[in-house]
Length: 497
Ligand SMILES: Nc1ncnc2c1ncn2[C@@H]1O[C@H](COP(=O)(O)OP(=O)(O)OP(=O)(O)O)[C@@H](O)[C@H]1O
Ligand SMILES: [Mg+2]
Image 1 (cartoon, rainbow, N blue to C red):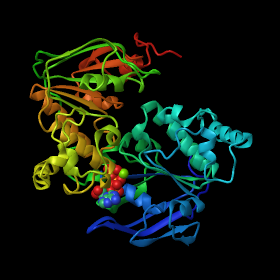
Image 2 (image 1 turned 60 degrees about the vertical axis):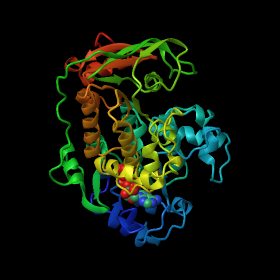
Image 3 (image 1 turned 180 degrees about the horizontal axis):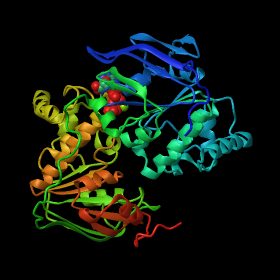
Image 4 (image 1 turned 90 degrees about the vertical axis):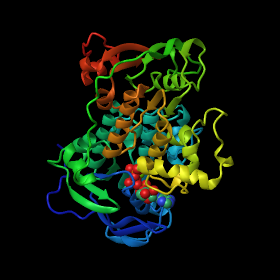
């Protein structure tokens, strides 16, 4: 509906030409040329490790390119730091937000500008928020905001500075589907005001829906650079991976469902706010994949922690005889991995939640590396065992967690957002691993924001509202719509309003 108002060829706001960057002997971004146009939304696509984040880091002054040039508004620029890029009108919303949690929204927004956190600043923030349909309480502390609102603060922060180019690295990875569509409405409004918007995403549906133009990287090189119009999801998947790679999961089989392996009855957890368990009940059986759907913050996270056995109950019961319980947590760098340790060490920290595991520091380093090799190969972890996890791309880190948790054929696997940040091929591979565990009579609990993912792998799907399991639907009867309605609490399937 909304495209930019001028018809003829336009000057890009920014042109990055011949950008190249290596880490050690590995060329990660290889002679990439890319343009950001005013009034347009550009999607930057590519498999995990394709070089997207590295390219962005060079454009915003975080990394120095080995070679290549940046032209902004027709002028050649060299950025020594992100500050220089900001001055030139380029701002980035990173996936791990850079806000100061104990500061208020106004304080965060004016930080680093000449403005003071006064009424004028607050009024300007409210004005920007209103234009984008954001609801951000200007005087609330950032730490009290939900993730979606924190992201809105990041965006407002950049617009407050009057930037022309907004780059968002996987902005929807942390959002629910509803929050994502709200974000894209806002991004369209920003583009329509004449700015240039660039985003990275692995969710091809939203790319098809929202982007004007797509640039695809493969192995650090541009393999496609074209208008988005007319492209569908499978076109994009094919551009990203090249030919001949499976991007759909094999159909879930009819497995015999075995005995009960874990039972939660009226389970409640401590804590403030909505995100607690409040009398949740469920039962898992050997050989089945059970999904959990829900609007985020309705108890999914504590449910995963409780089933995995790392958070105690305040009331209710948890019964299980199983000891081999694996957990892919939602938050990969918070509870999943230690960035400053190597891939080999992280792979060894099998039972990081209890003391009984082998402490990686006490294992002969050579043994540690040798043990990591087969996993690195099987799970396509794109680096050597001795590399620190912090040097992996987002998807590379997720693969390390999955490899560690899945490899010993756990009896129960709790998988929270298991494919978050993974490209199509890796997502397919992870779903296959979940099905394999069930085929071997393990029980799998999958918590996902992605309803299509749940519909693809689960035998039955539970719906959580307010810390309780309020519904259970066999996969054959579940649809996106029926689940969506249950998630917002209309059990009769009547859409309210
Ligand atoms: N600081 C670093 N040191 C060494 N290698 C790095 C460093 N940062 C990135 N790499 C490597 O560069 C490659 C590209 O990484 P990058 O983060 O740009 O990928 P990406 O396209 O953003 O992937 P993802 O979709 O998984 O986020 C990866 O192989 C990664 O391991
Ligand atoms: Mg990345």
